[in-house]
Length: 222
Image 1 (cartoon, helix red, strand yellow):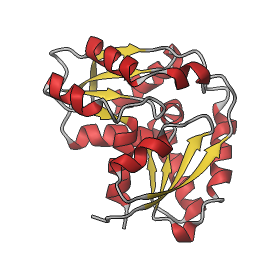
Image 2 (tube, one colour):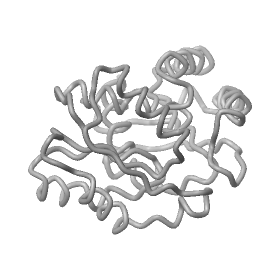
Image 3 (cartoon, helix red, strand yellow):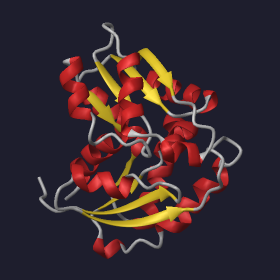
């Protein structure tokens, strides 16, 4: 396993969490961050085509000679694209950069499948529309959502104010005996400081979007 991974990361321009937490999951790694422009509203189907094209154009700004892996770190966009659309975006990013590509949405289902999780509790900050797409994405992987709740952030400012305490609180409310694990979905939610405590409390695995992305990056790194 590589000890130092150079990752080119595409994130929404409002995201403050990935640059802070991803290196904690990948000690010794180095990030080259490119921010994708977006408005104050949460991402939806209407805004998705322009957002996707911006990501493809901006990927060409990455210094391909100086990175090992490209990471597309927008969870909601992956869910809205759906499994096929997310895979197609990854393919186009590979063409644009010549590097292996990890997408955060596919990383989620990959880590659950790897660990044999078939019933999962999920918490998000998303709207009903994005949550519906998330549920379909997970179901496509053959995984049942046996517990679910959302913080229903109305815009990126509300999303950015969600605390680790609020994340842990909704996680505790949502987990139930039918669930084999929990997934905290969204790369803007602060999770690094609460995952291990929640795992101890639940006696079951607890994953986050950024943690899953780090796992996928490690798997793809040369």
